[in-house]
Image (tube, rainbow, N blue to C red):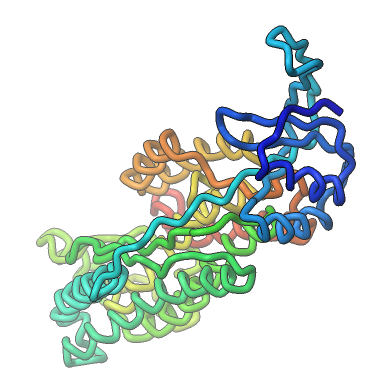
Length: 386
């Protein structure tokens, strides 16, 4: 085993790593300040989490990758011979960066964003609640706007809560959700995001955290869709055509899952057109956000699932397919945003990037693709009966 001179910090690492794995080679990268080990073990699934716990006691963290490794013979010489190992398991150990001192605000930033988002959603709901179609079942526009706000923020909130419960379960530090205000009258909110403050330990955890949000939010969306459909209004197709010519109504592409809820509430009637209640529109946003989130691209929830399923290289390729899917669904602003950010910000990698995803989760991945399809708005040219 070739070694280089080690400083005091990394000299403590070698006996810890060697107590778990059989070392074939060790090298210190002085410039980037980390030490890496080529290990002989083919299976690191059970030992690697214990290694992480031991390293955390001395302020270190490790990553495991299957990659090319260059071993240097006689490393003390400038003309050292480099031998390439094509596909080795490499464990790199680095110091945990010191956390920056945070400036405490009287009112946390996430609460400010939440208040703005709620205000925008309520104002959007009030505008949508003022029409005669919206007030068919609930006559008070303020009450209807309040129900709309609770429904839409509930869908988004439960989605983020799903992520937070999964993060908490695996002891991963993360921020509170930041709700992103939108444009009242169009889309009042663009969802929310959580900033992760510690690494995903392995692919299984990355998958569980990624899938928890969309599934939790989808359950609430279905409930809102059923109730929102039940209080929506049916009008004759002739009246709809007249109102469309007057620019008082316009059509939405509907997803298969929403169509199913319309059938459950007997709102699919021949020669009649359904005018969405504000609550049904909240469900429409919920279904659309579920579909967008499950697209296997970049750092969307579906992107995390694809990263855990296929690894880094295929994740990059699949991201471009996901961007194409966003364009086809009509979400071109999101497609452009994902395209730009995917070039500048690489996907997150789990600390253990060697151990494969479990078989059960591999099957769940394809189920999530199915959910993305049934929650995606489908153009009427493809499904004219919808």
